[in-house]
Amino acid sequence: MRKPAHGKNAGRWRRVAGFWCLAAVLGAALIVMPLALGGQKVHQKVQLKGPEGGHSSANSPGIWDEVDAEIDLSGLWGSIDPDNDVDPFVYTEPITGNVHLFWASWNGEFYEIAHAERPLGSVWNGMELVQAVAPDSRDNLTPRAIRDVLGLLHVSWARKGSFTSSVYHAVRVSGGWTEPSLLSGMEMASEPFPWLDDNRTMVDYQTPMEIVTVEITVSIGGYSGGSDDIDPSQVTVESETVMRTLAPQ
Image 1 (cartoon, one colour):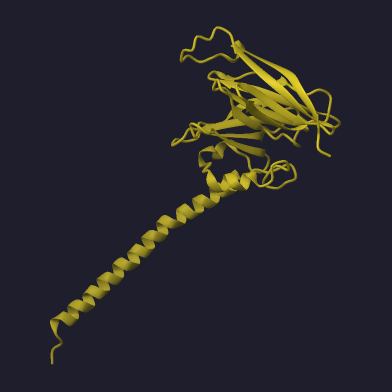
Image 2 (cartoon, helix red, strand yellow):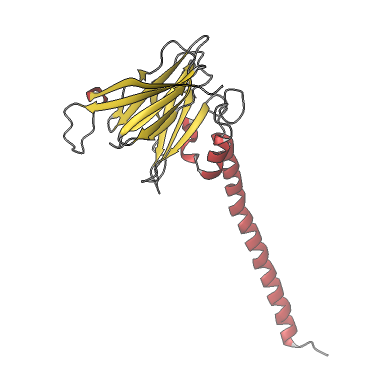
């Protein structure tokens, strides 16, 4: 007796369905594998080392793991050396949502404070240098940033020496970064934190005995409020120590 025709058709359709199912699985694998490998590559590239050889700064434990989980840094692969670069810090602007990344970049001889920005919904704009730092300054770089009421971006960092350390500060205008200014004296200072007090820009840093608060004043010569780039040489940055309080023991 001949088998019903629909039996052959059913077998044919099963073979066709099986073929397309296999093709779909292979296609999904081809799509997923590069994504997985790409994600792994991003993960490896963005884990900068801290001073103790870990993945984050000794003064900000875990911050890089948080950054790694939340921010895609693939556009900065060529700018980051995961074996040497240290102390990443991310500042997200509360109003615009723009993300700023600061870190200490090793150029083969000494460290440089580096900065990159990613506007909301866009890509990283590439690395720019804030200041070259002297050799033997790997420890305790810890850059911190904030944007003031005038829209200027401030960054402060500490550079540890053998017996003293120095706290520096720089301001970014549309034309670039100002020449960094020295905030601390001959003391073992660390962990600078820029913050806003109403319309004033302040920087705190700590010594073994006290917490020092410095007020930053920025004036721009010849600025008319237009859209042209502001030359950093037109910017005057002044600092004044306004408070000293005992450090917690």
